[in-house]
Every structure is written in C-alpha cells, then in structure tokens.
Image (cartoon, rainbow, N blue to C red; front, side, top):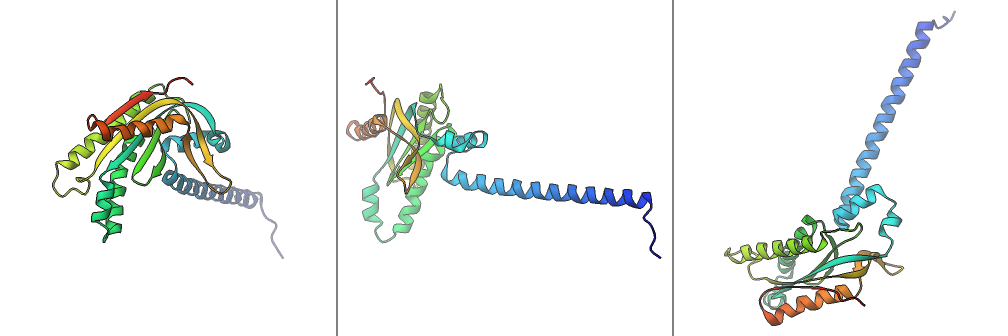
Amino acid sequence: MPQTPTPTDSTDLRDDLKFTELVAAILSSLRQARQLQRQHAELSQFLSPRVVEALDVDDPDAVLKPRIAQVTVLFCDLRGFSRESERSAADLMGLLTRVSGALGVATKQILEHAGVVGDFQGDAVMGFWGWPLPQADAVEQACKAALGIRTEFEAAARQAGNPLADFRIGVGIATGTAVAGKIGTVNQVKVTVFGPVVNLASRLEGMTKLVSAPRFCWMKQPPS
C-alpha cells in the first residue's frame, strides 16, 4: 500500500524544486553573459570602443543614426607605399603585413585618445572625434594622437631592420561640422563621417608632401 507523503517530504520536494530552478536560472544567465561577451568582442573588431560603449547603454538605431555633429578629423597617409609595393611585388603578403602594422600604429593612437576609426583607404586611415558623444577636448585628443603616431614612426626609423623603418607619414587635422553615423547604401554601410571637413583634412595631409616639414597641418573649417 503506497505511503502518503509526509509534510516534511513535501517541503523537501519544494526546496529541491526551488534549488533546481535557481541553478537553471544561473546557468541561463551565464550563457547569456558569454553570448554578450562574444558579441562585444565581435563588435570590437568592427567598431571603435567609444562606439561600442555607447551601444551598451543606448538603442543601436539611435546611436548609429546619421546626424550633424561638430567633429575633428585626422587623416594619416603612409609615405613610400608606391615605392615599397614595386620593390615588394614578389612578396605582397609580406607587404600587406607591413602596411597593416604601419596603419595599426595610427589606429592604436586614434583609439587610445578616445577617437573613432572611420575609414581605411589603401595606405591611409581616417579617424575622428566628437561622435557618438560630443567631446570638448576633441582637437586636443586628435593632436595628441598625431604626436603619438609621429613618435612611434620616428622610433621605428632609428631601429635597423624594423618593418616600419622605411615608411614615413603625413597627417592632416581639420575641425568642422559633418554628418556622422552609419553611412552607406542599401547593400552596405559603415560607421564613418561625411562632409567637407573630411576633404579638408585629406587636403591638409596632402600639403605636407609639399612643405616636407612639419608633417602635420591643422585647420578649423571656415563657416559656410
């Protein structure tokens, strides 16, 4: 004849059930945390930390929506790339590694000084400040990034055999209004900045080829 469960048995069963539910909830939370960590790591490969941080606390559509912003743009171009590409035609992968390392110097300085990497154009990189949140010290941070880039390349030039030793750089910096955010076409977009201030920074960088020294030009975009 089956025994009727005692009150103590029922209490133990409820406690076991609550414990099982708690363990399941903890495991589910851990899985979600790992998924968020993986997503965060994947985003960090494509977006600057400043943008990822903004996405963590606000709606992505609102953060990335293109909008007018006051920005400071830095344009950094490698010197000697054409000569190096001709000389290294038999080892293009090796050249790619060296160019990636050289551009990595610029991107590291941009990111370390709270900037956003906006675009790569062959042997050049563009960074900007003032988005997704306003930055009162945008010009100062851009100039510090430029000085950091110069310091690293000058150090490489003094080291025999350094893969960056043969590269020189030019940097142009401009400040003005632009459209910043998720920009592109229906098929492909990227987080970048668009407007005359970008062209101005690029032209200023180009001027460093003519004046030779200093290798940095900065200008505030005149009011339209």
